[in-house]
Length: 341
Image 1: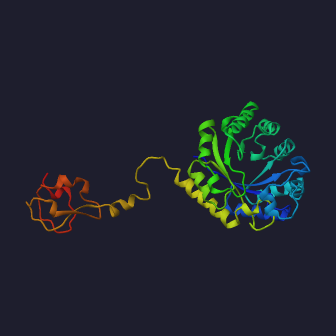
Image 2: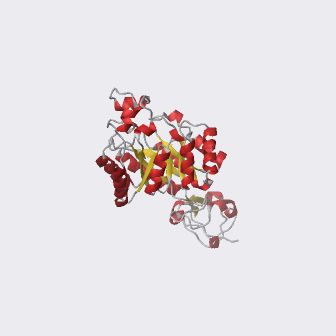
Image 3: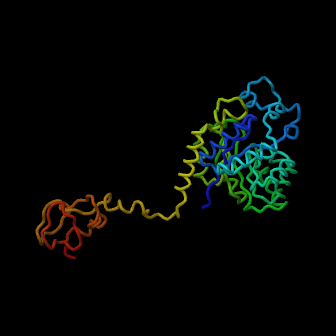
């Protein structure tokens, strides 16, 4: 079983400040996530000047400005920022990852040497973007919020047509509402994706709390992505639906625990750690009252008590009617050498 990849999604929760971005890296590293992910875009290549904000963006920012462009312009990372953050990630022993939103961004991130591409839900129908990523030949993790199963299949077709193999593709089930209502999560759709396309699956989570990504791991997710922030009350589009530092750490720890719990060989047998408890917790047949040599054992003469070590209570009927070969005291463990075969 491969290690589950945990992506701590910093996104734009740096609020355009490099020092906050570094603090986010600190948090992700301390939580022991595998990647900390940012977003690489230029506002004028992402949205038109008149594109409106989503409802949750307007609510979370509260600046009475309903234009996406103005919001995103403040959240851009420069080339210098990218290089500084990559260097800082190396220092903190966590992998840097970022999401591009256009073909220029794909080329830029490829030149920076990223080892994989993470595609956001909004780009699943962006053919030239998908093609550009496939042509890099690097592994792809694709989020599928707002998508139909056909749209997922269409994106996979582009990947494969332009050079990617199924083994290099991971599809994340996702719901693009911040926060996602629990009754809209539909985790079973993740399994549908695996069954339909035969690719690795995962889950990108926008619910409040940590229980849903943990459940996704138990259901077979190989990648988990989750937004986090320094403070969920900060102004910005994604802070309110993001984990705070302590929650991110708890999520990673819980995922690693579940990962360990489901990594066995599937055989039902005593584990190494519980072998020592068998003799203590199980029972064996004991003598209820003293018997003399030659006495015939009746059901009223025996009972099952801890510890084990003698005849198993599963042999109960085989003992009844047998004679004892020597005197036995009450509460003695009954062994096969005590009775006449």
